[in-house]
Image (cartoon, rainbow, N blue to C red; front, side):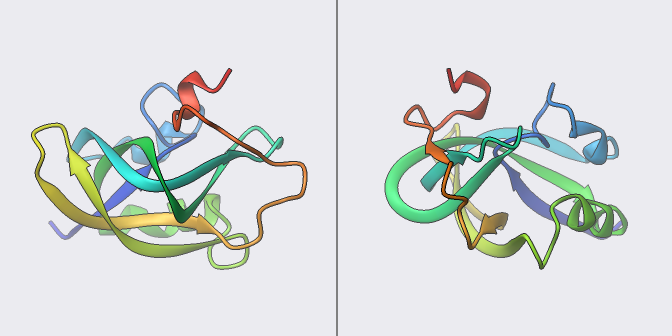
Length: 121
């Protein structure tokens, strides 16, 4: 089976509203990436690779056949772009995976200082 590794930092994560798009996941592992995560005010976050903040995420390996549905959810390439970034796993290993990056952060967006969408309050 051909698969792709994506980094989920918001609604695609386990327990979140859009995790169903990853229902066929081969594996899910906690990870971190460097950058900045924003609360867009639209009930979903945005990520930018700038900054040295730690963003808490999940490395999710999905069948390549499921990737187009995730792209549609993320509004790729109109709302989000995809970028390969290094993700650090709990054991310290680093892997490159695809993350969705928002080019135009909305003016009302606020930085999530904790770097954690699930604990953004």
